[in-house]
Length: 379
Ligand code: PEP
Ligand code: MG
Image (cartoon, rainbow, N blue to C red):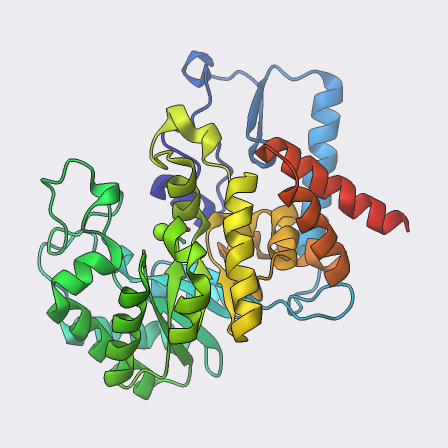
């Protein structure tokens, strides 16, 4: 598959539970019927594996099945610290399955997925119906809805300007919505109506916020439409570095590690040739996440992570160590993340985070976290 590991084709594959590796050099040379091991966890495709590699792959498949079959419980660290595990969804269709897999709510509802093919802004009525259907699957639970995130990889013809030369740096996310405020206001109206028609606890958030003023403006608009909990996504370095003043002005932050990695590493998330830089384990990205976690603690505001990083079980532990209070992911990833969190205490998670922060590359950070957790276990 072409593209980066967090391009939307990859996200859709993950949400359908399909094992996928992107940008694999030499994949086109594989012959029909050739035996391969596709190891998405280590981003490798092994052609013509030997007996030992096959045995190891089978052992891991069995281990994975055992974890998938374990009872569904709320996300909790080994010391009892709760870490609610939420689902990333792009349509109400997947809601029931997410509940069955133990989602404790929704941490990211990508509303733009509902309207990717329309050339007109969706009506308040259509939106109210779609959001109400979603909310009804989560009575009494938190559902975080992101307002339309038009962007380079998710163009919405009624919001985006396709003449921009560099749409990843253009009028996208909250900028596009504030430029066409009536579209944002219609969406907030629809959300408030859906909230009134269902029993879920609706949180609303703005994508791609890069300034304190945008956070303020969005929070005021959401509140004027009767939505009681509003917050922002932290997906660009500026908002990570300004997380404290931003959190003083809004209700919560949700870290979008896909874009945060793209912008911190200056590596297009759609481009296979720079896919190796699109790695949220990079200490540069982890340091930005640490800023947001610390700001959450100072302001006593929740800090979630809803990028693909939260679906990597080992990185999930590190994210908690950096201050994440909830994790949201494709429902297919819930079981493995739940299992890994249950193996470590908050102190161990902080030790793993400190070890990863001290590394100088993504690979070294992953190894340092793994070693720190193994040492904590041995004690
Ligand atoms: C992100 O950027 O991490 C994110 C969750 O948003 P999206 O992948 O939809 O851009
Ligand atoms: Mg994003």
